[in-house]
View 1: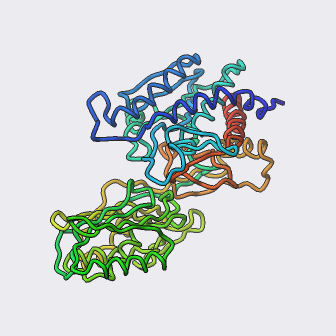
View 2 (view 1 turned 30 degrees about the horizontal axis):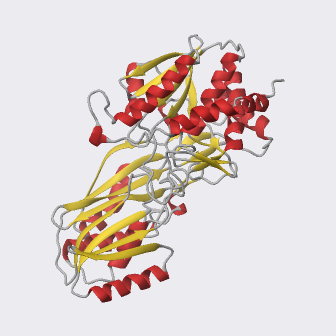
View 3 (view 1 turned 90 degrees about the vertical axis):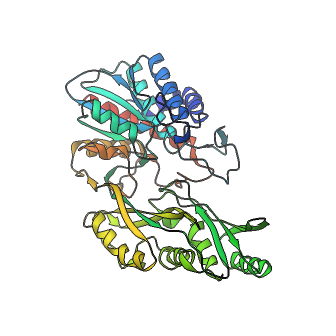
Length: 466
């Protein structure tokens, strides 16, 4: 019997060198730098090019599709096993103790943006495939390792792949957690639009929070004009002392600048973060605001603050298989002359629909002078636990970890796995390792990454030699 862990350990130095080289590329989508050649900006395309060059040197057939998505291919056959990863990363944000794009190893942990989501796991799966090829394994089907460059936004690259290439027979995405994610909740963002306007003794000039819809905002900023600066600052100081947040206030020519610092977290588990935006709104309620500014602040503070389960809209829901409906308020903006928008992002189980969510929010939104709509959405996805793909992946995980109690799971996160009828997510976050995806100081233990590589080796081997 092959010692897959020993094989993974042999790859440690080369794996880390290649992974670190990819993490150093700040592959955040940047529409302000988009061109015809680089539709998502140059950095995601740079990461894609670097990976495909690496794969070509390793002896794989490669293809770059429009600088959006690419693949490394191994073997041949009528069936295709797809391994879908992504090379784009979330914005780093603030709060890091080291350079997020100059990864370091400290206390056995590799720290940097993307080491957990998804460059670290993706490269572990790639190295598993590479090792099997170098061992002389002859796959009985085609294997395509497909990498997208826009998973953290709207999946532009991977959607392009499925438009121009044949759909794989089945596959997995190394972009979640172990053991196996065989179900993913649906996703939709309700977008609330509202006009600007002030009519109070204190004037809210602007409010801004959030980097992406699928992140709990770590920071929120507001500018307020008031005739009593000292009183407002005193209230803010008392508010900071009474709540689990940090912040600061500065006076400038355009008014008082308030900043609240909370804790970022992945939008699929908003209860693990501290939403700076809703805390700031809660503070602003203590001021004498009026007009649309007050309606905006009241809506956020009264209906969104500390509500990750939609309770304040009488919409809480739980499915026995897929779990709770969750809500993350990831993007908020207000301008007293231009208005603004709130993004309420939901991860919903079967039994819930976007129309049903909108119907719950609409009456409250109307009372606060807001309109509600949604655009794209993803329906819940589920692969039966008895599917041979799920059973093979579960066996690999149990064999390599000894965790006999492991069972397939359903999560709120969305992975490329849902693009295939028989697609799941598979690692690489271990059950006992904290989830730091989308957070400052994102990290993965090096030993966990090597363990995941061993799991992927056995899994891929068993899938292509069955």
